[in-house]
Length: 332
Image 1: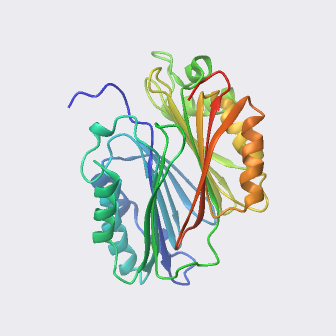
Image 2: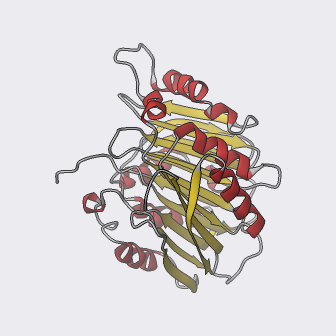
């Protein structure tokens, strides 16, 4: 199938399990993780862990493994949802039971290039419904719209409890139409004599990504000839950035797990500033109104205007606020 560019928009899956385990899913051996990723069609290129969780930079995005939670996001034409059943099976062997699932993604730039089960959101939802146990009875699928036809937010959530009170909030930022000069910093020089790790470290410092959260340990990787991925570890919170810099379908994402110790609005502002995008969408799950408004204000300080704001409440996930922004020079 002829495709005109690489799909930057990620698919994201979060699986939460029950069990009082200090190690839990972190007991999974690397070979088992590789086997699951093989079905998804990606590989591990770099890894870093701390006392709370393990993080993996993938050939297409990232994987985070906590004792009772897995978060995996993949871009391109990966088949992310093929990881659901294997992860559930591995967890069961460790005496962990699935209690909630959340799947999110933006609108693909090249939807016609996506393979089964990602050819449509309806197909993804049907696949998920068939893959998860019946006791996850609080379910909802939603496409949250915006005034930008190219940006809508797709969410499916399911859980055994309708509104659990311990869901941490997450922020997912998608950026397109990146500033060409800034995007150019994510291209490698031919025969630069560096490997992916050293070139990635250089990009992290050159672009100021290391200043988004100075407290984070960073695991980064630069692809050849272009592209970049980073996972940040700050206590039990992660952050992650992925960049597809090619002009015509340029894309970057920033995602972070919220914490009372982090100024999320400031981190979003710093991340968006790295890329100078023409269009930005921010999906905030289970955050308070004040946090969403502070993020809006921070993004608008960069010369972007909020064009739309939509909200939906999903059982097992909480309220999802979807805000879209464009540069003031850009018309809808």
